[in-house]
Length: 190
Image (cartoon, rainbow, N blue to C red; front, side):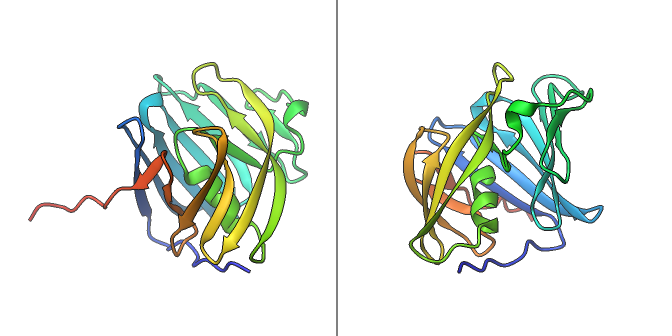
């Protein structure tokens, strides 16, 4: 079974170069007894905030496009029911375990980090796929297969086809063929 290192208690910043020439980023930090991931979505020109429990279960998702207030705000309760910030229950998303974003490989990384699979085993889950342009959120079935300790196969939201990726020690994607490649961290000037 894959055992990835826990995220550090200090903020962890990761960036990827996207195949279209843009950059996607995420910063993961521990706060209020859970994890917060805040990132950018490359050429979609949007930002997101995902809040997770200490065991990496999605609790809240916010998408910001061009305003200070979220354009989309979803929450998930402990029983797995999804709703909007205004209290409207999203029955179409019940059963979705995770959020999927096309322009950032962080979201599939968290799924693979959390899945307790042995090598050559697979799991199918339902994710809530977010269209940044239309704000449409649809449930999608995805299958994740662990090929080796840090190598996985899954359907990429970027290309909508099956890809293989290598994960780092934290369970975050290093590279996804023809989609994302890990960018070297920025180094401060001396």
